[in-house]
Amino acid sequence: MKGSRYWRLWIGFALTGVLSPSAAARAQNAPLAYVSNERSGTVTIINTATDKVIGTIQVGPGPRGIQDSPDGKRVYVALSDLARTVETDDDAIAEIDVATGKITRRIRAGSDPEQFAVSPDGRRLFASNEDAGTASIIDLDTNEVIATLTVGIEPEGVAISPDGRWVYVTAETSNTVSVIDTEANQVVASFLVDVRPRAATFSPDGKRAYVTSEISGTVSVVDTETHQVIETILLEDGEAKPVGVVVSPDGKRVYVANGHANSVSVIDAETNEVVATIPVGRRPWGIAVTPDGKKLYTANGLSNDVSVIDTATNKVIATVKVDGEGPWGVAIANPSGN
Image 1 (cartoon, rainbow, N blue to C red):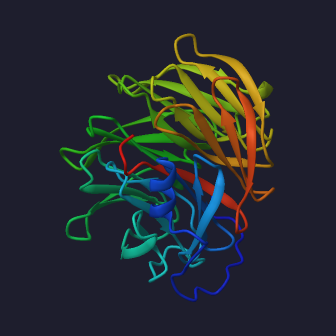
Image 2 (cartoon, helix red, strand yellow):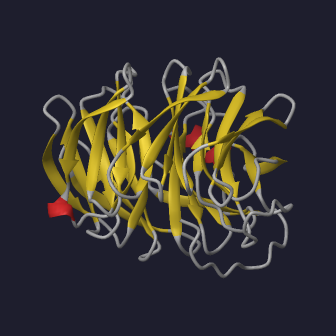
Image 3 (tube, rainbow, N blue to C red):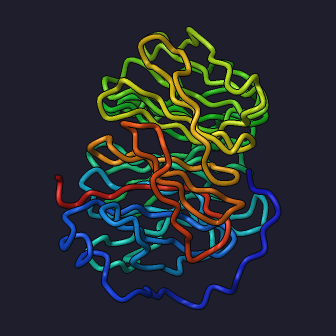
């Protein structure tokens, strides 16, 4: 959702902190959590070993969607301005080098890129263009948009299957999910979900996808072979207003950030039942899990912090204040491969 934004002037790229991200990661042998701060135009970097902020990068206006590359060496963040239906220089995907903490390039991704997904081979990026009703496919080798596809109305969430074959794009106003065949670079199917779908994710084996619907307060479970909803899970009696969703690395748990309820729902992926509800900060939107599955991070947009959850106990073990306002998304980069 684009919403009302008040941006700081973009004054350049700068990294602050007493220790560079790469040095901190090597010292702790830990992945880094990157948090996009929508109202500040920054990305906060957190060392997941210590759960301490180690740096802040000025990236530009409206950072929202954020993802790491498959090799963990880069982090991409979607930027956009306030101009609707018009692509400007501020509409881009910024690429951050994890080793140096510096922005290496700005990738054109159509008007108002909201969220995106990177292909498993790291060569393609699929972005939703919210105000244009399209999805852009970007060749990361050439830095060019190679296809622009018509999808639903106000597209937002983007997810790619583990094998790279399917891309799901949610659309807030049409309540649909468009299915992109990445071999043909075409939309080959579309299916309905509950009201105002926001985010999507695939299970590690690619057999299921999960789509959050904010207004309905539900998660749709999708059979990815047929691209059909096979079950709908109600959260917090429909009052959760869920946004971000992520599946544990072992595929056993689905975690949902409930923006209105200030909580995270834990779903058993085998039974599709909610097995725990974890109170977190105010208005959690983005959510990410560490590669070992032991920690979960939520970006809390109103309390301007990040909640750190121990997945073994389903309890918050740390609250990290970000150097910015409006935390929106979280990505965890693991360049060491550990």
